[in-house]
Length: 497
Image (cartoon, rainbow, N blue to C red; front, top):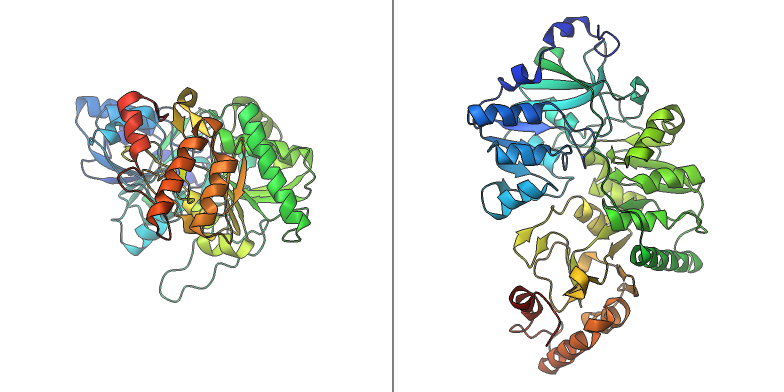
């Protein structure tokens, strides 16, 4: 019945329901699940595990590529399935459990998880759950809309459960490039020198004997929840374009730019959307996620090729991609995230990294993850992989939040994800600050005047001037450095009275 999807005849007998497959899990197991930013995630097993745990308590360590869709993290967290979770999440229910200390969350650079599993720094995965379009005659797994860490999970798991998703077209075969780095010591360089280069195979090789179950599903990925561009994100896009035009004019890159990377979310998607109609042509992307803007840039003809680890789209753009997959397959490749985010390749290709900040300070340190220094939002994701190793590292943010009650530019960030050493350019709707080649005392006035919301500039100038009176290479008044955050906690506003 499913011979076109399960081409290895010996595996047809492995088909079972999600509830039956859920019985293979035991307390304390380490589980690797496919899924990267709501794309290519298992649809049936998370729900079956949550339902089982409500009757028969089950506690697992869950490792994924990045965030899951379909509310899966929340369902499992609410049912008590998740004891530990890594390396990234976006679910509000799970976020609450993490911040209450009920789920231990390990926030990791997305390039590191597979390598830590391979080296034994993280204990091996017991069961891998991987969504697939099909299984080849040799038993290899053809992924769906993401690769993430699936290849690493399948490589080491004792048992593998495959969810065959009938909603994905068989024409996805050929979209993926599965390359696994060699083991240490003596590893050779990863021989990728062009964005459109392919190194590996189109499917994840696996011993069919380790496939313990096959579950049939027919559910699309959760659609992207990125909001359309607004006046502020359009202004941010305009400043990014102005900066890039300056780089071209200075001869530091050509009109095709260097390969682009953009983090997930509304602001990054809007900034890339702003490149449509810009003077740049024949651009490429080497990123971790492709959003609507990447498909629109491909359609405009300005983007020639895009490499990533997942594709996360709105419902309408997802349908367009599926209906025309034969056209797009020659312009897109999906790789394991340890390749899409690999520092060696990011440095070699000279990536322009564009990521989002929750807040940044007057010296260029960036907080991407923690509200008021304590409460986790989503995780660092892949931003650090690209920021530290890219040719140009840009962070974008709206200058204020919560109706102006929170300034995104503060005296000192309440949590540091990206130090000033890894940040080249900061951008808000008011302008951009190019920090390259500047000492701390030169950065602060530039950030205050060009990036800060006008309501907060006088406060920041006063703080900086007073701090300079005390001296120091990076002037601060430690007793006041986090006073904006404490004021917000006490009054619900960072504005001084």
